[in-house]
Each structure stands twice: as structure tokens, then as C-alpha cells.
Length: 139
Image (cartoon, rainbow, N blue to C red):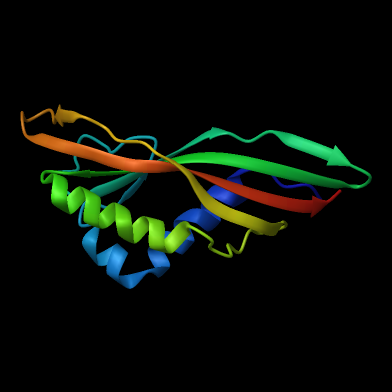
């Protein structure tokens, strides 16, 4: 049975959570799309699936998923340090994607962000990058 890019997102988050140092650094947690308003602790990580086109070929399907992963922190040095942990975790990682064979996971671009303000008026920095995850599965 064919599976969607949801399995890719799940495996990416599992890889991030499996890194004990990274998990401990992310006191604000890991969130899809955006952090809920109730999150008061930084640094935190957000991820978003940008696109995941399918390519079917003779009984198999390749998915090339592009995901943006960002660190949000009140200090730019902390944001960059935690982003380095994310890079070390995901760049070249062998993800375990349910129903799919992971071909490659790597960082394709840095995505620097500016200074923003939380709803409470606290300033925070956004640092991160784009990752491509290539998978293949039998149809």
C-alpha cells in the first residue's frame, strides 16, 4: 500500500527527538508549522512540509519531500548552536520511514530569519534551513 509524505514528517521528528542533546536543548518543544500561543519557553523548533512531489516509475514511487526546519530562540548564538545540532542530526541521516525506503536526507539551504516579537513583546531569532528527504516505495 502506498504511503504519503506524512510518514516522512514522522521519521524526521523521530530522528530529532532521538538526539538527546538536541531534545534537551529544545525546552520549548518541537512543533509542526508554528508554535502554539501557550509556548513560553525558548528555544523551540518548528518544521513545515513545503512540497513533496511524487514520481511513479514501473511499480515504484519516489517522493522528494522538502521541509523547512527552524529554531526560534531569544539569543542568536543559542539559535545558531541549536541549528548546528539539527544539521548534525539530519544532514546525511538514514531515516526510518514507515512503508518507504529512505534514499537520502540532506540540507539544501540555510534559511536565516530576522528578529521577531512574541505575543508578549519578547524578541526572538529564527535560524534554520531546508532539507530534502528522498524516499522510494513499491506500489
